Amino acid sequence: MTSTPPVLDAGTRGWMLRTGALGVAGVVLVLAALAAYVGLSLRTLDGYPWPDEAAVPVDGQSHLVDLGSPGRAMVWDDESIVSPTCRVTDPASDEQLEVRTTDSSHRREFGTAGDWVGRWTFEAPSATVEVTCDRPSTRQYTDVMVEPAPRTPPFLASLGQWAALPAALGVAGLLALVAAVVLALLRRPSRRVRPGGDRPMR
Image 1 (cartoon, one colour):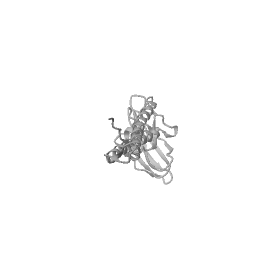
Image 2 (cartoon, rainbow, N blue to C red):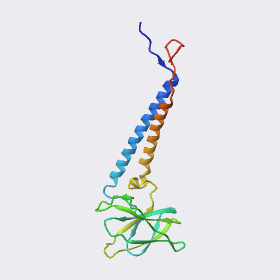
Image 3 (cartoon, rainbow, N blue to C red):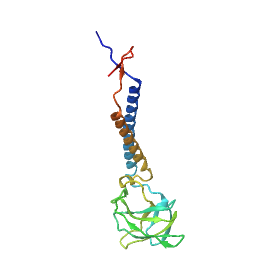
Image 4 (cartoon, rainbow, N blue to C red):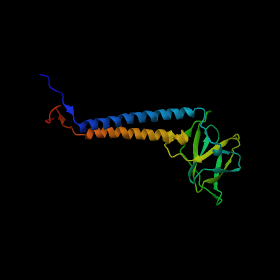
């Protein structure tokens, strides 16, 4: 006599569908994060695409920089040449702001012998600051770049304003995978029912 295989109850079927959906969504989001990171990294291989308003000539003259909003800002410089000496002033109060040296962990592609390196940071009290960079005698007339400081880890800072995209996708994917694992571990074995009968099976 052939025994009839037990049928999973509705609760167990729903649990399996939810767990599977979370797992699949987690994998898809993690892969999307990797694809976004690779795609954005390839975009900067020939040099990071700085906006024109970020450039400040190293010529000893004062230049107004619009940061968009008050807050922490960063000055980027070409690591392959001698760094200038830069001063930052609040044009509203004519007060010179404190400029701090960084650990040079924030880097962006330059497309030349060196990279762009985040050299200094300062706290901007308003959206507009005045930046003056003195050129060393051994340095050609080039620019430094000034913009709001990245809020992402250094390895994502090279992606610029789009850095949050792969980070958000990766975090969402990992959370989905963790949720799927937790759901699978916490689910208690459900009773199964024989087709055509009300008697539960363990």
